[in-house]
Amino acid sequence: MDPASILYGLPSALKFVKDNLPTSENGPMFGYGNPEEECECKRISLFMSLRGTTTEERRRVLVSNVNVPLKETRALFGKPFTQISILDENGYRFNDPDLDKPLYFFSNKCRLNISFAHNSVLDHVPNLKPNSWWGSGSSGSPTPEAPK
Image (cartoon, rainbow, N blue to C red):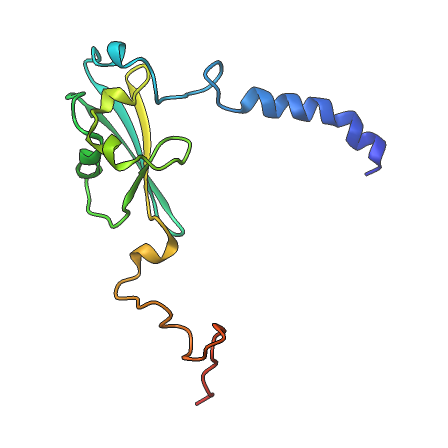
């Protein structure tokens, strides 16, 4: 493809991307409405995603008690899991004091989208000792094992 044809198609490609990005004008942006209005919701549609290292599982729950604290949403997912962090719809981790606030504090139009994720890849590896996979060398480089 020659450069002129790439440049010719660029404006329509940019318009497509702009029109399809979720924003408050054209897509489902959930969190951070007006708490004074949100506390009047009869229920909150809670969209949850459980992020594994290679998988993602999603659930939607209608929560009739809008005063449920954010930290209690783990139980609403319906199964046990090891992911520690609760993230907002943009992937930002909620601070610990926010976990005690009710769902309506973070919802918008009676909807809230959250994810459960590991803090890091190593959060879910049981009994991992620091540098247990490295040799005892002082360089910090892996020490290869001799072939058996």
